[in-house]
Image (cartoon, rainbow, N blue to C red; front, side):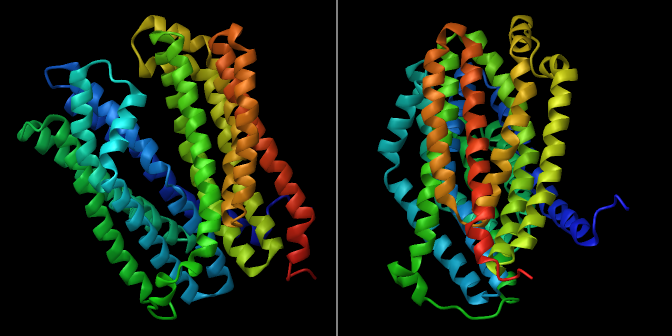
Amino acid sequence: MSLSPSPGFSQRLHDVWRLSWPIIISNASVPLLGLVDTAVIGHLPHARYLAAVTLGSTLFSFLFWGFGFLRMGTTGLTSQAVGRGEDQVVRNLLGQSLLIAVVIGVALIALSAPLIDLGLWLLQPDSDATAQLSADYAHVRILSAPAVLMNYAIIGWFLGRQNARVTLLLMLITNSVNIVLDIVLVVGFDMNVKGVATASLIGDYTALVFGLWLVRRALKTLGGQFDATPLKRLKAYGELFRVNRHLFVRTLCLLFAMAFFTSQGAQLGDQTLAANAILMQLVMMISYGLDGFANAAEALTGKAAGKGNWYEFGRAVRACAVFSLLTAALAALAFALSGPWLVARLTDIEPIRQLAGEYLPWLVIMPVMAVWSYLLDGVFIGTTDTRAMRDTIIVALLIYLPVWWLTQPLGNHGLWLSFTTFTLVRSLGLGMVYLSRRKGQWAAQDRFNE
């Protein structure tokens, strides 16, 4: 008996890799921009400039990704419409998602003053000078809100149509413009933190212009025509609102879990905070790969679900699982064998190296615990079963907090145990729902059973 995969499954593996690698590369380019920002602003005469940019960047990472449903929801619904062959619906979804992005973006600008004040109050800058510089950064950066959110919608739409290279192109454009303007505005024009924010602003709008040009080209290949009616009737947004409201709650819960971990680490001292930050950077490195395969799962399972072909759906899940599990296993092995070496690449401070080494075992098990939550998030986005994502993360959060409370005597080990438990509960919860759907609801809907 041959051990080689079937031709159909081999093709599905190829499809997963085709969709994943541009996303993985685009994700991996994000730290490069952070390094350039740090290098440019870090050469200014006072540390408060770097602190201000760090705080401002953190604020907008949370604020903008809170509306990440514009990417995820658009991908799931678009991929299903592609599977059904409904080109007009694919067109309508793009227009609706872009319009929602514009409305939210403009609202964020209109509410910028109280939002920035609240954000900086929560982040607690260590001095009035740093707070003022952070505010200067934020009042410029908030102007990019419509562009950032519209780019989310564009990327989600193209990914739903199984074109992941747009993600890479837009990220490369954003980062390239940003890096060049960082140097020009900060070094050349001495604009300090406002220069960094302006570089990001121009980079986001440059990517938007290019993205809209790509959209215009793509629409020429689709059937149907422009129809403003679905854009004007609130009822026409029903499915998009249903999917996105669950994703919004899910994303807020995830952001809260991450912020809680960081804040509790800070309570344990600066060295513990720094050690946790380094270990989380390593976790984020692995997430770049797992996110890529999860995004592939969104597009492939969504298309299969749109067709009602749950056999093809299962093959897509298995193919994505192969890459995801391999990535998680390699990450766990790398952390187990080379963890101290990796930590040493990120810091020269010996006490922090030693402290991070003490908590490295949590990093070894983290990829194995987290892999299913990444993969199944992609599957449930593809099927637009976002209620399951919301419900499972709420359950995980309700377990995470009591575990942290009970394990406080363990110090930072207790914090890592509680966060690992949160990750494990998410994976188990999504896995249980997935198996239930496969045996029940989805099997009953299969129009391709023979």
